[in-house]
Length: 602
Ligand code: ARG
Image 1 (cartoon, rainbow, N blue to C red):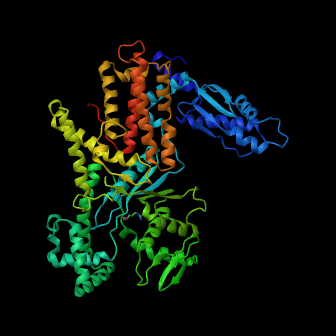
Image 2: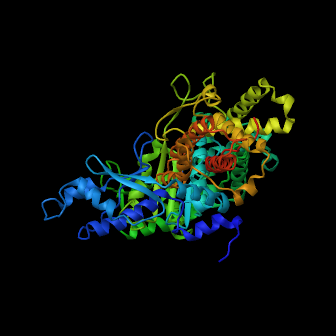
């Protein structure tokens, strides 16, 4: 082959071992080979490879020596102790361009130093072939993410907002991993409350067809008024109960009224999704309703369904109460619907990973019907095996007073108002900095949106999701600290470094070299290269906070790099501009996965 200098990076790539972008995997494979050579008689030992903490020597550690020693000692081994095992593992490590050196420390930790040259090539490679080459590849083709899922005519509250934000990120991470994701909005659009709502609609608006959203005003108030009437007026109650029967029997007039109420709610929900740019496909509870009898029949035929006080239930080991699947009046409930939806997702939609995002308060419900599905043989006995189900629970949203998040008049917060406030506050901050004079009104508006909505999302995602989190506009819109504002601005700054250089960055990508001579350059490149394993971890453990932490550290590494290494006008300009570009690309991919819109100017 005769290559021109332009395709130099491509030559290097072809000459290299196959590399997926995941350093941890790659090192684990090397140590796996070494383990097999070092202790051929010990089977099934997983390599224990982890990134080292920044202040520790080496870039990665392999920690197998100690546990391996306890497995082989006293069994006629040639080794004298864990450090000797470590030495042997090091000696048997296949040579690789990736590894610069290896050393054994203390009781047998193996510290691995990566080759700076190799790292530089990997970054160059990503610049040429794109960051998608660093995507994880989970062992599933299709997944369902069941998220947001508000209830028709009831409030869509901050809990649903959390579910929307977290669920969207999980879906994005899977989509990045080339998994087909069915983004399901499992709205509460079925149940006895509809009898009362329909009856109330008939009374208030005898001409149902012409009812518009604005006539009803706000469905929550409508819901409250109809509930009050239901509780007070026995005649109305009677009619409402009959309305349920008619609706469930398929009476077109009642179906129509139901559809109308759903439509109005849907329009409300859509405003939130539009602002957040979240895609969802509605398949509400009503969708599964016709399938419920068959599913119950199947569970019954497996001997799972028992009579209990007139209801039909499934008893489950480890739970004090049984799971009710048919109520004593013969009606179905949340659990019957969820079992049926699970059946449908597994059998009709062929999903291999089904992820539910709700507050932790619903954990027991999920644990119970997951267990019932395992008993029915729908899911493998091990909760690690596929097809797999996961409940992603999250904590409460608190106000700054530490209580449940409410408005000042202690009303439920309307999500649209909340998002509008985030945007208007970020716009005010931009105007205070004089941006209304520099930018077009569209630019100002777009940036206010990106920053405002981004702040709400990031403030939620950066927390360990299971803990409660305090909603504070002041905190989330701060331009210092671990906030979306800080990160979006960091990215804008990097973009301006690149544009100020006046260089054609796409041309540099093809021809330029990266050199990692200084510690700050090397540390930045290492962190960039750890993107792949981080997304994989965030995706496997369904933890967006892992990605947020990575992003924040990235911007930190960049700041250290930029304050110590002159970029524009230095002899290393090309290499350093390429590091800037790689950082911007990784940051943008993180933003994308977190549902944030990047900004380019500040
Ligand atoms: N509608 C429910 C609620 O507002 C959430 C539904 C979650 N999804 C599910 N398949 N159960 O609490």
